Every structure is written in structure tokens, then in C-alpha cells.
Amino acid sequence: MRNIETRKFDADVEQLSAIITSARAEERAERGLQVARRLTEIAMRIQQKGMSGVEAAELLRQEAERYQTEAQEAIH
Image: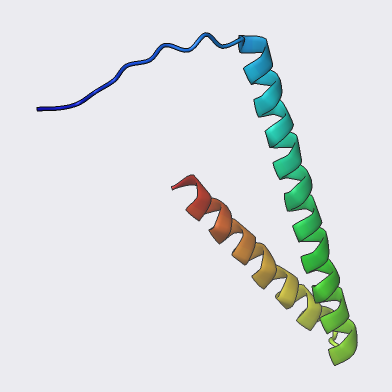
């Protein structure tokens, strides 16, 4: 036997929409900060190791690939 309780909630659609919009904006801001920190780390590594333009470009390509993989994993 299943014990299922059904409840009905009266929700203000505009209020829920505002909450979701705010949460999305906060998430975008956090992701932006994370990317900025990561780019700063990469720039410091390039400087510290005295990388050539070709080496720096390869490092950036690898980082872009990492972001693409993370994005695909988030979707699936």
C-alpha cells in the first residue's frame, strides 16, 4: 500500500519568477568569478614559466577544452 499525500500550494507566479531570476543571476555571477580566478591562475603560470606564445596558446586551448567538457557534463 502506498502512502501518498497530495498538497496544493498557492504560489504567486511573479514571485516565483523573481526568485528564479535572482538565483540565475547569482549563479552567473559566481561562474564569472570562478572563470576570472582561473584565467588569473593561467596568466600567472604563463608568466612564471616564461611560456612562448605557442605554449600559452596551447595552455588556453586545453583550458577551453576543460570548460567544454564541464558544460557537456552539466547538460547530461
